[in-house]
Image (cartoon, rainbow, N blue to C red; front, side, top):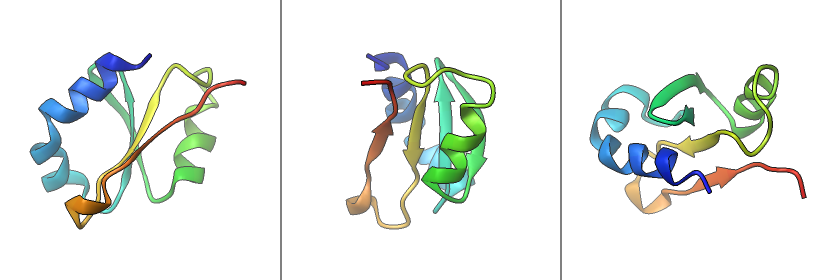
Length: 75
């Protein structure tokens, strides 16, 4: 699930770090849909127009060792 979004992130990691360091980005398919300061803000804004589980929130860390991603979906 969300393999396309994860691959987009991996393929563009350096460019994303240059533009969005310390931010959270919402990715759908091969496109950045929004840039936010927190996971909560990213989730709140993304769910206004998209269903949970259809997008990926990625943190663009200052320290690459802190890299992680979140996938939000209904359980």
